[in-house]
Each structure stands twice: as structure tokens, then as C-alpha cells.
Image 1 (cartoon, rainbow, N blue to C red):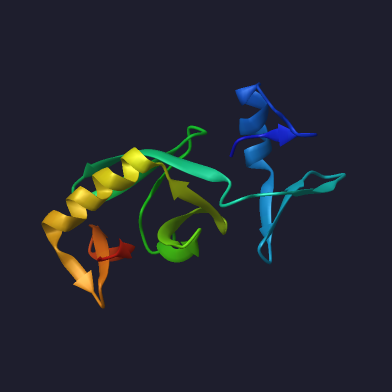
Image 2 (tube, rainbow, N blue to C red; image 1 turned 90 degrees about the vertical axis):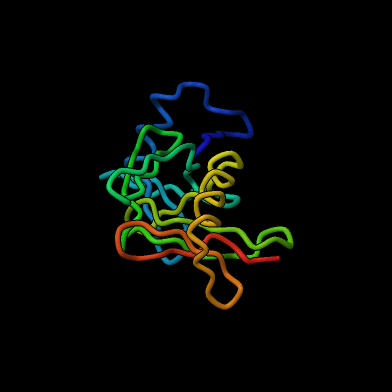
Length: 139
């Protein structure tokens, strides 16, 4: 989530992090919800950026640009979408709020997935725990 207000970036990262805690997804539309207001938020692709990950005991923990970490699991799964004529993965970060992978993180995950060689219907998957999750199509 990179905050922009009135076409200007919000430079205070603490404020952006605060906004991320009151962000909600209502039927595919994002809103900042406080006890007194419900403000619509425009999101180009997804509010969070997955910037890094760790693997421990075959479990993948993903880290976002806003210091929020979560495990790739049955609740926080990936799905593939068509974005600018390319198939890319989005991941559920929390409460139906999604994130996308930055390029470096995506390619590191693809390297791991290629070594595991889990390909189902021309879709490369990555394993986390006992499950696997789609990362992209095989060319």
C-alpha cells in the first residue's frame, strides 16, 4: 500500500501503516473504515506489496512493505489474474485484502518452485506446508 492523497504521495510511512490497519474490502472495493467514516480507496492492483519471504520447516512466511508478515496457508492463498496481458499471482494478505509480489521476491519463489517441479495444467505451484499454491503459467 503506497498512500496517495489528492494526487500526492503520503510520505509519512507511519500514517500509511495506520491506514492499512483500517482498510477493508467490501465486495472487491476498498475502503478506509473508522467509527465515523467510510472513505473509498482506489487500488490499481492490490494494496500490499510482498517484498520478501522466509522458509522454515517447509512453511513460507511472506513479508509486506508495511511490516506485516503472514504464512502462505489455506487462509492466505494465491490466485492468478490477468494483468496487462500477463498472468500474475496475487496473495490474500489478510481479511480478503490482497498483495502482489515485487519482482525480486517473485523470481526467488519461482526458482524454489522450479526446483520442486510442481506443475499442474501448465501452472507452476510452490509448496508451503503440505499444500501448494499457483505462481504462474509455464511458457
